[in-house]
Image (cartoon, rainbow, N blue to C red):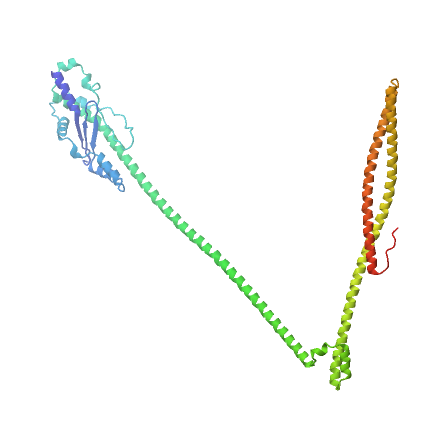
Length: 456
């Protein structure tokens, strides 16, 4: 019963543990309460006010982070006062109550492994299990032989466990502080970079606005220059138009002045129009019947003008007729030359006709020869059929005759084709000669040289 009671007291003392440490400065106080339900243990620590202010003031621009940090950091009011009194009693026992715990308390506890979890998480210290505790490793016979009271056993176990849990928590605290400093520096650096990027973005926006204004100014400069060119071209056109109008007005004034002068000259002569239209006989009669020298001079001037105009008109008619005759003569000369050339061609065609006649005679002779050879071939074939022994000799003589027959047939075809070409050329030449003879006859009739001479 005594052993079972002692084990129960050890377990209850392990369930609740409070460690209070005061450093030399006296400003930071670290309190840790550890509640282990069953086999698991969860540690909660309470930093000092300065540490809490440094942790909370890290993200002043982000209140959500501050609220999260305040929620994660426990408040000192949440600590269990009963566990605190008990830990104080455990940490400050009387000297006569723990004579056997001094050597064990003086021995240093092994350092736990460093915390390797992600940043921002707190390390949870779990006490050693029952199998690894020194009480479990003791011999039950020894425990029964040396009975120890439960409070003394709790006083012996609490200093060793508190020392083992304080060391990793100090390391966690230093790591968290370093991490917070690094995050604060990183945050400041990111804020500086953000400010720099905002400045650069503002500068780029200003540059873009300036470029846009320059482009708009350039876009307005081009239409203005084009408008100036159009206005200058319109001004030049108006000047040219005005100069042309002035020149036309001057020419009109000169023409009107010239007409007025002619009208004045006509009025000074005082000659009626019906007198100018009169015949030469009437003019001569008027000159003879004139009573004064002035009338004689007037009618004489009109008569002289009529004579000069008639002579001029007659000379013009003669010149036109001579020009027409000369043009007709030139055309006749050209036609005569062409007719001579055609006559020469006709003579050549006559010579070709003679050649054609000769070729026709040769063709006829070749046709007669062909017929004769065909008759001979028929006779030879008939003789071959009648005379069998003489068949070989006729076969030996037949190939030369066949070759000759083929040559004659080819010559006949060539001659027939040449004859047809010559006949066509002869018909064309005869038609051309008749047409030229008619043209020559018409030309001779126009020129008046007589009838057409016979063409030989």
